[in-house]
Amino acid sequence: MTLALLLVAGLSLAGPMLKQSQTREQPITADGAVRFSGDVGDVRFRAAEAGERPHAVITSTWGLGKPTSSVRASGETTQLTSSCSRPSLGTVCRVDWLVVVPADTDLTIEHGVGTISLEGTTGDIDLQVGAGDVSITESEADTVSADIGVGAIDYEAVEPPRSVDVRVGVGEATVRVPDTEGYRVNTSGGASDVINNLGSDSSSSRRITVESGVGSVRIDPS
Image (cartoon, rainbow, N blue to C red; front, side, top):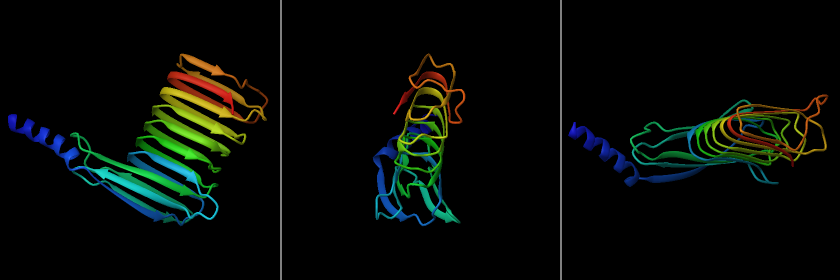
């Protein structure tokens, strides 16, 4: 038993002591949609500036086991994946992403743990995060769906969306949209603090739905 405990302690200490990092850049060639799947790390998507080529900057950090990551094109879709093969025992393992895409790219994101930020995109957004904060700024997406287990989301639209669905298990949800259009707003769940400064237009075809289990909900004009 003592030997086993010593081995566990040794592995827990060795991971951080052997910490190393590697950064690489890969082009994104598919045009239309990006599907992202990750385990642990921070992820940032932003719209490409004029003349800037789409690409991904991938930073892997690990102790005992190097994580895997890949960028693959399939038709009009780019698949981005990263995973840690040897988690637990106090070892260090994460993959951070900076992804630069054409503004109108549709984004589908499934991530385990880490922060997510989306900046200035106009394509539809569908994201699921186990634990982490989500920031969506200067969005012109027509449809947005966000499901977060534990964490906070701050969503800001600069053009009126057609449909916004936000679900947070534990945490805060903030939704800000232009008030130049009316929205049918529905809030549900066990959130202790719900503030809607936008109102609700039952006749509108534009819809905002926010569900929070534990935490707070705030809906404001942007």
